[in-house]
Image (cartoon, rainbow, N blue to C red; front, side, top):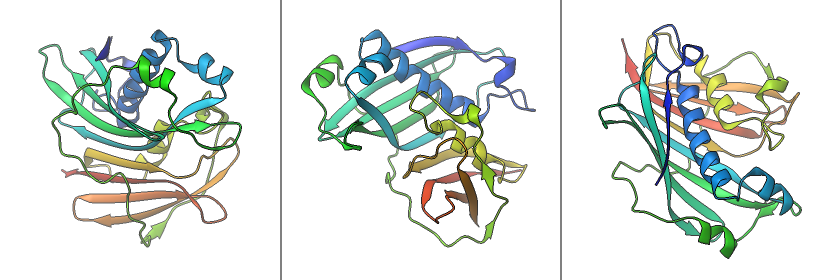
Length: 237
């Protein structure tokens, strides 16, 4: 298991003095990035070898939102590799050691020169120590497509949404989609599936469907191809 300690900053908080959903996902992205960097197989290594880990899907279960000033321990570990897929768990613990957020993720190892998945190389796999899968409910990584009940105003991707892979950072899709949730909706589970990378200047069309306790949002490009689809399960006040 790889971990780092942090504290919830004011800049990460919403109006309720809680870390926002996208900020929680940032914690998870940070911890697996820090692990790769410390293992010397991080961003520079991947660039030299023209490879990359691309996130295929998230499932994040939130038992309690972190609050302003709270001390947290963010942890991650891989539990399986199969072909070009990597499977990774995460958890966030509070100062008492209670798990307040747990997550599962599926990653695809990519050959950037050929623009397609590549079998995980032995040197990469050897760097990671696999551990037991986290005891949590596991949902399907694929989110079924749906007919939207409404569409929202198109969004032009700004430059500050772009990460080191030159496309929209995974958490930014969540940040976009959160705008279409009712104000009294508190997300307790987010599922996200990433299908096509959006880049700076792309136009995305948000499409929404609402069911009791669940709101689905997909972000389509101008050709109708889905870049990301998200399912928010939650509670209404």
